[in-house]
Amino acid sequence: MKQKNIIIGITGGIAAYKACELINHLRGKNYNVICIMTRQAEEFITPLTLETLSGNKVYKDMFELPDKREIAHVSLAEKASLIVVCPATANIIGKLASGICDDLLTATIISSTSPVLIAPAMNDKMYRNKITQRNIETLKKVGYKFIDPIRGHLACGYVGVGHLAGLTEILKRIEKTLK
Image (cartoon, rainbow, N blue to C red; front, side, top):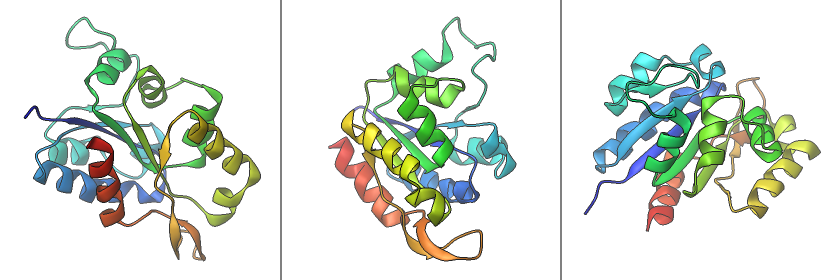
């Protein structure tokens, strides 16, 4: 059976560190994991960490000169069996819902015909905001799937809905999507 390529998109939220455990589990199940991180994600986790865990180059700059003469976001989109955005901020959800492709992650997602799973993680007020909810509904209507956040401790010190879903649930949804 051909090895499946899972692109993990990491955005700029405190839950970015949880992508590390996800990558480890996916590698343990023999998936090829390719990471794309936003500039904001680099405030929370380093490319070196993700590269070490994934065993692959970490992509982050849409305008970086490629090793081969290929357009990064198009070639990454074509390689993907699945794209998982974990964690997904309100910012990335809003950009995708509006069709904004101003970074490598959004350009790759919008260039792809692969399934997309989005695992939001943010402050509960941000998550419940009508604009965020409208953006989520917009993305659901075009076929993107969501792994809803859970009630839990948030970085701001509050408890509320916005905590990244548990690793077990995320892995279950990935496996289900790839079948």
